[in-house]
Image (tube, rainbow, N blue to C red):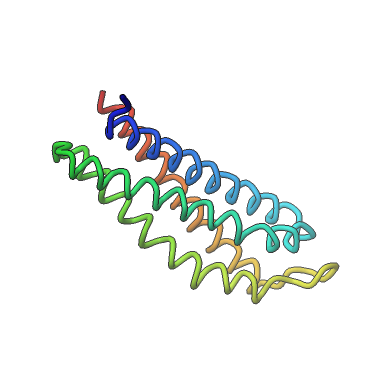
Length: 148
């Protein structure tokens, strides 16, 4: 018989793969945009589906984590640190999606046109926020692995 803990672990790992994988891909594509402005229109076509995968993964991680807490997973200082970092990701996500990304999209140059200083500034901000959010995922992974 499969235990609830095993199911939660599987859901947590799937969520982790989706969230961290998609966040990493998004950062890699943004770095490509920075190196080659002609890539921006391509990025704009795939950014929304990638963001949805990040959100799906984060929801799965959060729900399975809540499930573990309901099963009696002990609150430790390490768990508290991880929860704070997850909270930071949940806060950064809407800032990225509702502030930085729309500014990046609005200021993006038309194909064949040069990037403006405002676009470059928006691109740097957007990239920095995406890198911070992605690094938070990796810090959480290190804390998760370090627990045992």
